[in-house]
Length: 318
Ligand SMILES: [Zn+2]
Image (cartoon, rainbow, N blue to C red; front, side, top):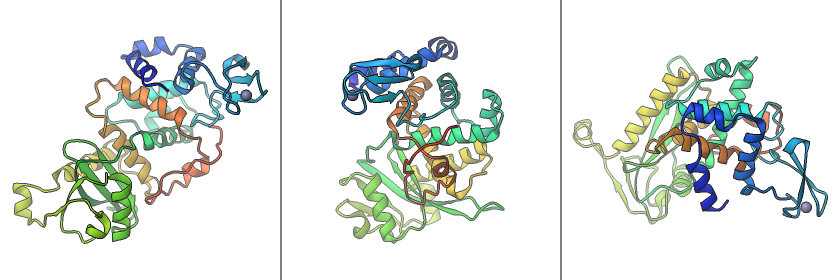
């Protein structure tokens, strides 16, 4: 999509609930929007890229006039094979993004009138997965790194989470098996720019071996010193917000295998906390839904992402 198109979609995106209802009143409204996001307003053949397409089945499928290949509006996206109206997906996206703290599966089920909790849960996981790669720009130029343990207290075992925070900016949270040098190196290489200036506490996993050429300040602080001026305060703040969010919105009931999905949702929201208007966030999420590949029910249920991103496979209907 051209950046001009992108900007105009964002600019014109409805800003209030009534505007949203009005803008996406029918399936045709939602289809037109997805066509704009996916193809810049004019569908293209998935095989030969021709723009000469016949519209079939009320605009949900297209047949190429050149090669005969059929393309569906949602094939190859997170919405592939959905049996529910697009309008409902749009509505769910609005509900999820318009609440500062997000929504639990139980509340989504009630609001959307879904017969089963499972449907609400699956939708939330699909939407969460669309939040993952929405911000792939590595962190920099000043980044603090730390780690924390999440969970425990009667629930599943405590899980290790690696944390990186820009000075007053974006964050990354990654569920990891351990914090040895190899894992720390992978974290730094995937999440942090090559020339970022790094601050850590005394943890041995962060060294020249894991951080490479990046300038690195290791600050070993006593509790009293930390109270005075915490060297990794951005990380500590992020961690306390994330934990409060997990408990507040999701009652802390997060299975270890789904932890990364929740961390991704937290990160998506946190990194857009200064974005004016939730509607831009909704627009961003819709964009992400059509640019990300589909995912299977199994991938969602077995979403063990111990430092591994979800890999799209084939999909199932929900
Ligand atoms: Zn074609």
